[in-house]
Image: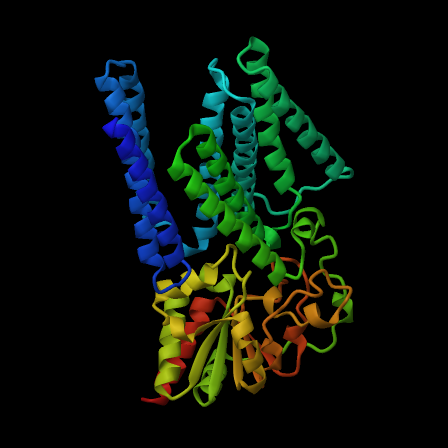
Length: 471
């Protein structure tokens, strides 16, 4: 009796810590402590589960000993591997890691459901139905996240599409849903197990088929969506198991992921259905032949000196900054400009990088103060009065075609108004297009100059040029 009460209290404590931790994650200043708080909540929930198992063993259920040993081994292996890989992962690989870990969460929820559905123990149709729905969502999140990881990691370089793909996907989903209904109806009989195996196979396949046609430029939204899926799956399995901690944690993650997905889709001026089913990128390069002007190159030293004597500079980081791992050198350059009296700010687009908040994490790693980092809505009006806009590795989020070219696939997407600055410098390795494959007309504007080269090398040269002025 006391153990059951302790289990309930620990679940309530864990749920409270989850919610409080998520609240603190809403600000970069308190995000780290929020992660720690939520982690403590998870430790409390896991410890309470083991306490219940040990109580059952003490009551004479010796068969649980093997399961406890396997669970402890799994915890040790998983925690050790995550600690090791988490410390080694490069910032450029952070989106891939997030996609994989998110997929593992969905897979864990699906595995819990698989164990429940493979047993002979009966259950109400409601509980069985919730278990099946959680299994479907968790399985889709698992394989969909793996495909997202492969796209982000360059294992899959192009969307995989064919005629009638939506119809095929619809048939797979409908068949899987019907199998799920069969699992509920025939649970506990031999045919029910066969239906469950086919159901999980269909759900896993659908996750793959759903994600393969989505273009790489939409991966930030897809990762956020699968994060919501994982939370929802965990919450549903928590309901089936009558576990308050899982229910509340799943609902919090699911609702937060859903809200983030909606906000990111809005930031691209596209509906979620458009992201998932529009085959974005088929018109890549449209209108490129109509671009007027030519790209002008500038020397890194000249650009640095121009910024040194400017009054205001807005920096727009993109994925190229992460690839070059140049965030530390960038902040060194920023501090030199600030010491010279230049007003320096950072502008962050909601979908910059390869995952939600990617650029914020990148700048935080370099120690950039949070009070000079601004979201798009808060800083866009400042560009028109800014002397220099410095774009580093960003492309689609500063493309003026989104405002003017109705034939462009990104038309209507809110962008950072870098083109409105008096002078724009773009650090870019070459003349290639962005991740979406759309030509960027900013690069051909009269007030824009290209500084070609790896961001790390270019910023190193800029830092040295500014230092030489004070020598």
